[in-house]
Length: 291
Image 1 (tube, rainbow, N blue to C red):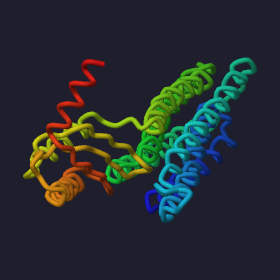
Image 2 (image 1 turned 180 degrees about the horizontal axis):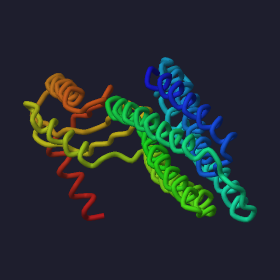
Image 3 (image 1 turned 180 degrees about the vertical axis):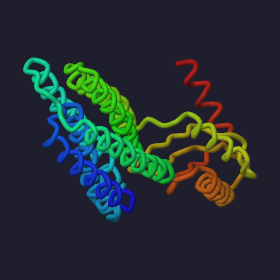
């Protein structure tokens, strides 16, 4: 929440400052950058709502809690990226068809530098925080801000082109910014979609299986399933135990395996471990192979 508040403040002030320069200069490239910064600032709102919802306790209707609201916020962020990019493209194309002079080039250059600094500050903070807490939506938002920072530098190229007498440089840079934001939107959208489809890094599965095998009494790891709910992980897995074990002994091994998993996997908050008898498991595997 602190990362979102700081992002909203920094990018909001950056967008307002750039908007004032747009009113003075008429720069389409800077207008596109200001729109992207404003959209990026506003994406803090759905993320903030999602984080607040995620704090609510599970109930009989939402038995896993409200963490999925964070993934839905990621969908909203991708939609905002697409809309802001479309608005910037429309203005840039219209300016190409109806050229107008760009003035106050020094102010445009300063505003572009301000846009880069503000976006890079916010991007670094969001990405670092998102990776620390495991939030795909916050990381996607940070990547969006980082690309906006580099597109701010592209505004400098447009200002330089206008200064050299190339009036078409400003709207062309505006279109280039649009393409860059669309690429980032695609990358962010793919990441959010993967999270919605319960995609998981295979390295986490390998890490979980290794942690299970290291538990005393575990003869092997069966099927391991993991899913993200918001920025927290849940796991369901099976372990193989000695067929001579009593039910109480198998339960103790399963409890130890659950404890080992929670400590071995970052951001894993809950795990359900099922103890399976080794002989029964081998018979089930043989039946499956024959089928």
